[in-house]
Image 1 (tube, rainbow, N blue to C red):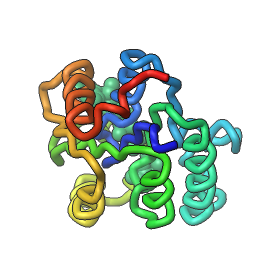
Image 2: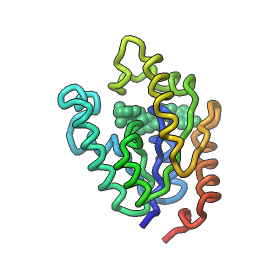
Image 3: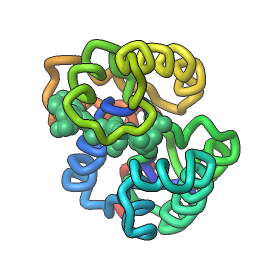
Image 4: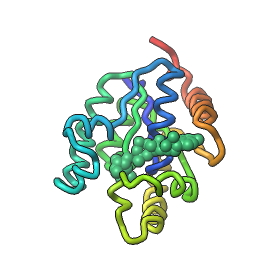
Length: 178
Ligand SMILES: Nc1ncnc2c1ncn2[C@@H]1O[C@H](COP(=O)(O)OP(=O)(O)OP(=O)(O)O)[C@@H](O)[C@H]1O
Ligand SMILES: O=C(O)C1=C[C@@H](O)[C@@H](O)[C@H](O)C1
Ligand SMILES: [Mg+2]
């Protein structure tokens, strides 16, 4: 079944925040791959990166993604790097519709700078690193089925509304309840 709604995009784009809102609005179960990885490992993401490295994290991420997609009709928030692996994109395409939350650098930086929970930003120049990652990843995120502008100044509710409208325009059947 191809009915999951899968949020992709940069760290700080709002995948977790908007995913929770969509779950409440649409009455569908919510999964966040970062949360599921942390729960399964009983460690935080920075601890996993520090102890086992990024490749280990990415392998766990692919496993968790496969598991949550199998449930069928949920809202799935991914980690910022999940969409970059071709095998993850293929799985998401087989089991859901991909929604890219497209957010500008200044907004992303404003949101992530306060929280030291993103190991990829533990560099001498975290803003520069964020900018480089955004530039590298943008063309890959753009492969998503649907793009939703996650504009600065829009509330979580407004962005969730626009996501629902965009999903409806793409394929109204995805929003039908079972
Ligand atoms: N309009 C908005 N849309 C989304 N998030 C918002 C908005 N306004 C404020 N925020 C806040 O910005 C932060 C967005 O971060 P969130 O954790 O949802 O991003 P993410 O895409 O899940 O990042 P990561 O890839 O690191 O998990 C949250 O703290 C959220 O409450
Ligand atoms: O953008 C990324 O590669 C990441 C984003 C977060 O959601 C976490 O999955 C982790 O910090 C890696
Ligand atoms: Mg998140």
